[in-house]
Length: 503
Image (cartoon, rainbow, N blue to C red):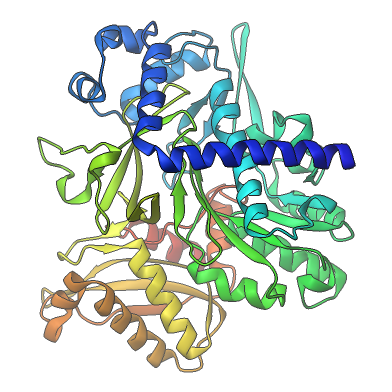
């Protein structure tokens, strides 16, 4: 153990120096990343097609390389899955992160050795480093990190094999030895594919361990923790893991879940550290205890560009480099990565809260919003409104989704399906608070609600227990990285949830 702790301490000091470097020289670091990416990509099929050999600046890059999405890169990705190499990246790629998208169309995101080590594993080191720097008396390395992961599958194409699965499973399968020493449960359980059986085995194997940290999506972590408490016949996690000191969370907004974790832990000493990761890469880590803002990680082999949301859909999209962004504006993320994604539209939106250093909050998804009536409702508006209504009515929300509904008289409304962990003490008051909070946060929503001319008051339906769990199960989306979409600009998903509940 002392040797392991010494190695970990050395790694953290080294990484903290590098973090401080990109905080001090963010634009220079991003330019170094950019030029290294171009150098590695210029001999690929994509690089030759778009003239990488003649690109000397990020401005030329933006002029010569069109914006990409999964569909535009899919032919090259599918050829790579079948064994062709050098198409998008200059090293061999055999691993593909299966996206946890909300549609039936799976995406297979390439994962290179460079992205595993330079992005995902650097992020693992950094989140531990930042926690320890902010908590000098940490005892993190005296116990295990309980990480919720997915599974992976082998694909056989003629005489060639590649692999796809949740990015968490790819990370676990390829972990360096030093990280594996602290991780739990064992790999055989961590990478199981069938969620309900996996849940039971995880609970059985972990309920007597010394767990000092947790990592995973909040909605699924709650399911696991409650199952462990049920098996031990106890009320709080502190009774099981008295030395638990940090929960690394991401995947969905923590706002609707914060109170549930506070009650479950019953321990004010547990810290919450937010992460921003996806199948495509790792982008942000909360670096201060007093704020849930995240630091944009600039040296992970990812070059960033930013599209103002009010420019989306225009013929001449205005794409900005890092040095031109402003605070308080919703930007769609455009990334170029060390796994061969070039000017790739990620689908997430962020707002910068600070430019020195570059800190931000996730504001939503480019495809998860409601703007049927000009209200421009974003996910962060919905999460904060739910939290505000819960606080004043002593409610706890397990999951929710919302979509537009059209009224016969020509106006409209938003229909909300909410599954409560604890119902509000006054349901009508909860609905009124939800509406008022949305008005306070969003002037467009407030304007459309004026005198019910465009939008009527929200229609909120209390859903039975396990509604969303059953919907996820029916759609083969249990566990791992899957989550319930919060806002939708059409009613397809909402009607599907209602249909599942009625079955």
